[in-house]
Image 1 (cartoon, rainbow, N blue to C red):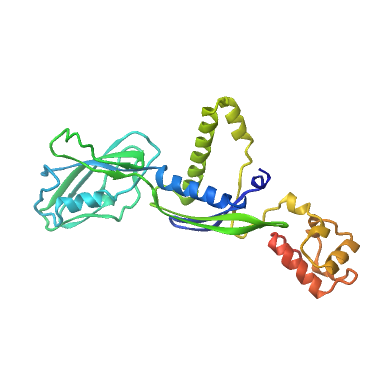
Image 2 (image 1 turned 180 degrees about the vertical axis):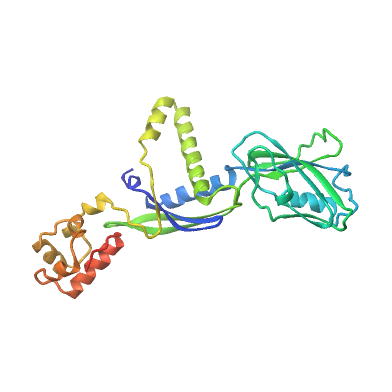
Amino acid sequence: MEAFKDIKVTIKEEAGNYGLFEISPLPRGYGHTLGNALRRILYSSLKGAGITSVSIKGVDHEYSTLEGVQENMIDVIMNLKQVKFSTKSSELAVCKLSVKGKKEITAKDIETSGDYEVVNKDLHIATLTDSSSSMEMEFTVESGVGYKIIPTSGRKEIGVIPLDCDFTPIEKVSLLIEQARKGQETDLDAVLIGVTTDGSITPKDALLDSAKILQEFAGKVMIAMGMAQKEVEAIQEEVNTPQVEEVGTVAQDDEIGGWKVEELPISKRSKTGLLAGGFKTVADLRNTTATELLNLPGFGNKSLNEILELLNEYGININN
């Protein structure tokens, strides 16, 4: 589809774990199609990591209490479920925590192993109430997708408490479809998608990974319908890489430069003045100046302002 050939992804905002992206231009209706697909994948299919079991010294089950610890074990376990990790590994890891004395225990007290790293280090886990208090834990940390439920087949080991785990690194996704413009075409879509993560992945990488998953599934559909895998791979290699720009940057688009003056949405008087001055395309206007335009026959401030406003829409600024 022709309208997909010059798709751009513009980073409208990036702050901490939040990113706002604009994807455009898209054919009418494809804003909802693409936006909803990406949102569903972001929520359901990205890899994350969390604690799936814990053993606490002196504790046989989650209904126990531990002397010198302010919280009951149910509260401690609920806090442990919120600990988030970043990792590139698909192997599980064993992490430990050993704390003594009167203090607040937070996620930064967890001793990680392998390439696992705690993301939300300030997360409260428990409170030790006096100088003789202590708490020792050993965790099983895994990476995965979606939600892992505690198995119903029973516990394999006394003292090891299994935890259900929500692996998703996405906290919130917002979606807005707006009208977009491309030259004379105004019946186009733009997707505004806001992504908030837990910090284990950047919003930009999260959106990129969701697009990869979408492409992978499309390829699997083609293979299932009889297309050879090599053909599918060849199609994927031919796909133009979307341009990613920071907000405020200017993309030098050759297609825009090729638009003819007589087809621009400006007054007849302005068109006549530009054509008389030898300006046939938008590309011819890139290197001109406001002074040069004002010297054109019948070209006044009204025509100049009209042209400057139009060029600004296309990301083109000319000198005075």
